[in-house]
Length: 243
Image (cartoon, rainbow, N blue to C red; front, side):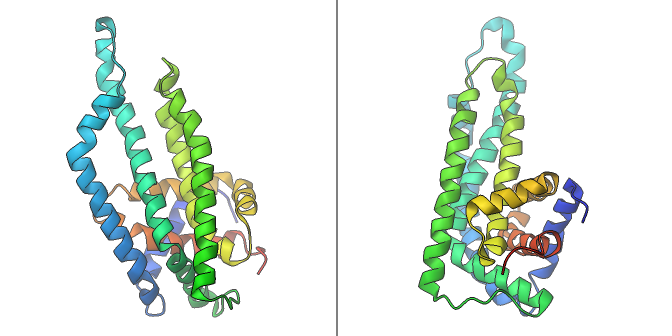
């Protein structure tokens, strides 16, 4: 299969089309409710606190650089939105992780007639998925801290929003590919390695998820759509993942 960003983006659309299928719909309800509640909280936060947050983050410019204030506001707003949306996405996935794992298995069964055999109880699935989510949060923090520090270095901070965009796309790809690949028994380091094999594909998928998360109404559907899309991507792009 060709590895490119547009191919990755297309999997999000395929996932969205799939989540209303009768055999999958029951597994969508809980992640959808969790995502809706948390994104409603995020929208409230942005409406009430975003302006003061931006005033706190923006560096104070001398008068002769005042012309840069509008550009900096835009760049820092993009970075802030990425951080906030990804933070809420991490929280949403932490809460709904076991249900997303079941959703991914249901998608695979719908498409192939079978899924990876899983005899684990709900508590075992809960423990396994929460441990995986915590690894992703740790990975995010380890990379987010240096990126955050770069944002305070003059001139360099002009490029940090672009770095945040790339990092956000990569993290979204890791976040959702973890469910189908994790169901096949791959650990977090192996999942990162597999996605790096098709970096452009992974970034295209993750960037589409990230941008869709910022579109009103659609952002409530993006979690189950991304899980379904990542599962389709796993089946077509990584069919040799161990079962």
